[in-house]
Amino acid sequence: MPKAVSGRPLAEDSEIGVTLWRLRPARTDEPIEIRDLVQRTGVVAKEEWTPERLASDTAFEEGQMARLSIESLRTGFLYIINRAKYQDGTYGVPYLIFPTRLIYRGDNRVEAGRSIQIPGPDEEPFTLERRKSKEGDLQISEELIILVAPQRLQSFLVAPSDRQKLTAQSVENLIQKYAAPYEVAEKISGAGQAITIAEKRAAKTTNRTLSNEDPYPQTIIG
Image (cartoon, rainbow, N blue to C red; front, side):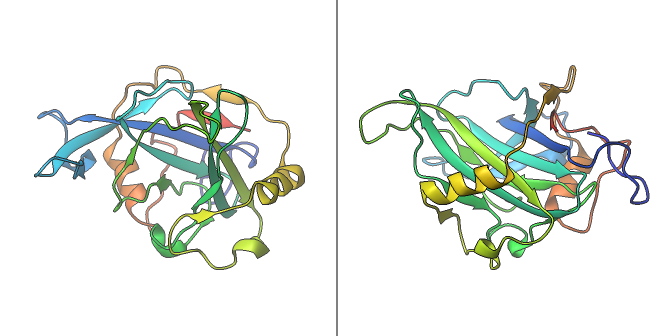
């Protein structure tokens, strides 16, 4: 995604960059700075794993670990809602997964060059599990609803302490109010590349930003 130089965007500022990271065992020739220390269930010691890029349509296997990075050219406030989608076309319970006070202490401001990581850099990564609906239908995907608002939403003026359960109707209201047509573009030859030191550092703190010399997000939505 084009980023800003001295605060001046290089492209339309409605674009959002999304990078999906799958964790794989770290190699000995990879910098220590890019590795995640993960305490997996049933494993005594923490293990070193490296996040690598995936195409947005990559299918995960159960038990695999993942992270998500979001970048925005538009200055504003970021909100991410997650819900499961099942075989019959229905959705599971929606959750606000960002902002929470567990991630950047609830600071959900975004601007050009800032990278937001979900789960937060100090949290364990997602572990993919395939669930069933109340009717017994298998989950086929996870849906993320990403919104960059020019001002804080009245419904979420204070970031919850952890992910927050929402009602299906409140999510539909947000979709009806803010949804717009969009296109998706994928970074050529990006899938499979390990996270860089700059990307890792930018996700660690709100004080670091990415530049035009750093890799663009894997998927551009705009």
